[in-house]
Length: 407
Ligand code: SF4
Image 1 (cartoon, rainbow, N blue to C red):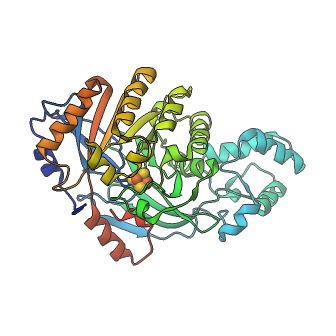
Image 2 (spheres, protein in one colour):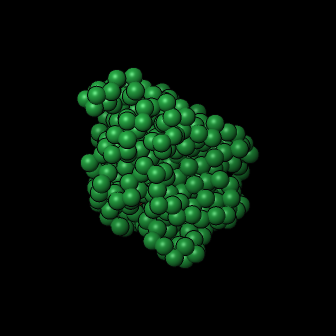
Image 3 (cartoon, rainbow, N blue to C red):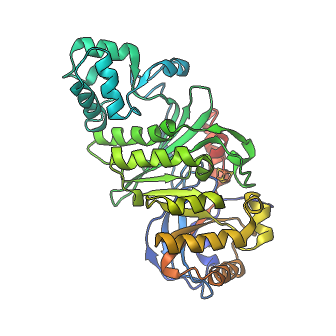
């Protein structure tokens, strides 16, 4: 790719002509970019709605209109979080242990099972992040919990809070791997968590720093769930509620299928986040899109399309060829829409001079038409890549941020 530079929303809007204005919001990833959007109309040749977006980041890029208000490096979220990530391996993680299992453990420690429900209530309804804050537990149990349990296993390395309230976090895992999570507040009251599903990524998308960094390992379902549970619990403490989750941070969610699905079920059942409020973003792991079709959950699917021709897509996203090419992908998406009766989002990372012209927009429109993707069942998000702004943040911080933040 020749260049990846920040593209203001106005230029994007101009690139996709004949657009009719309509406000909406959408989450999308390109190199883990999250966006809030103002929807424009569609190119005449396209059968899908096109969303022109302002950068609202999930992961790397801060919006051009967002300046860093405060940056804090917090050693841990609370006093019970591990000071050494390794110690956490041997402790019961109260933030991710399902209630029935916690009841069993509490009983095995010589306390009545109902104490487990009290603990859960403190964490998930009261937003307490400190065992000492669980004031209705007997002192003896609190002492045992402090020795043997922790509230969370993710070690918070860096937290940035921008002036729109967006929180970007880098967590260190017990084995030293780094992942990122972002919490995005919206004026309409939504609170959206953007989370990682893998440490690193094997997909190798050329515009993505995570892809260039390579794959380290799968996150466990607990590690995925905990990113969400932390935000949910913290928001609760402030009288708010986590409403949406997007899996658009580090990693390809559908390449960690089993753990991602397990975590989603828990978000749904234990945190009360509706499956339709959870978005899985994929580069196009066709076999697992098919698997997802057969699941009894109605999560939203977002496809990182970015290019509308075989050659261009393979050049930008090597996974295109790996999973059978554009025809296989679009056929699968068409089938997904038919089976799930659900709208699919096509993500389009705008790269200046590469895929941001009206002609490219028309090619996209033709592609969607060719595969009979109905306009009421599809949505295109335009994402401005934002390398320079994120790079500045890195320099300001003089800290090691996960490399995927840098685009
Ligand atoms: S699939 Fe992997 S390499 Fe591609 S954009 Fe997502 S995180 Fe980056």
